[in-house]
Length: 185
Image (cartoon, rainbow, N blue to C red; front, side, top):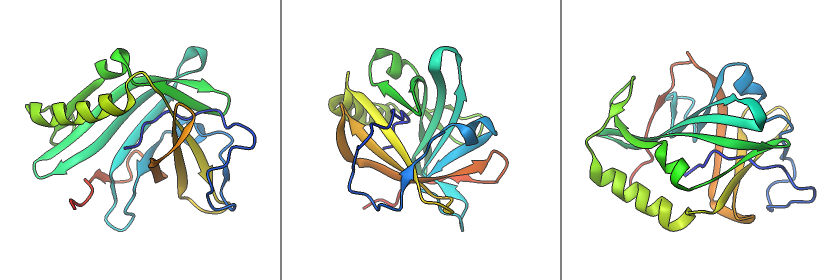
């Protein structure tokens, strides 16, 4: 799961990642240019497991809309609309009642109608709440020079959370990418 909440990079923070990766100084530059984050991209198939739209708001806030593919058949995704807080070069958020108010399960293609899939919603919410309720979740953005793929490194309450690591690229809104769920194990 990729929470979209990027935090101020603390000088000296180390996640034991390849030293070629450097902190992204302005993680919202591509969003300002109208691009979308595509997490776990397959550039050949033009798919993303997660798509995230970001827009800056007053007071250091960032509006986030994120779709996470849960299933391809039937087509289900978790949609989240939330506000994150910009702290320096990055953002943070907390899973709480306000966060969950912007959450729903959707199905099909645009405009992503609400799904009558209460079981999915319950399972997804239960896992999220059990793990992250009232905890500060952050993601640090890193990139290698000349590489379009960026690395998101997650923390929960300041502690490294390896399960929140993912790769993403920035894509144009009309690039023809679609959501695709992870293969089931």
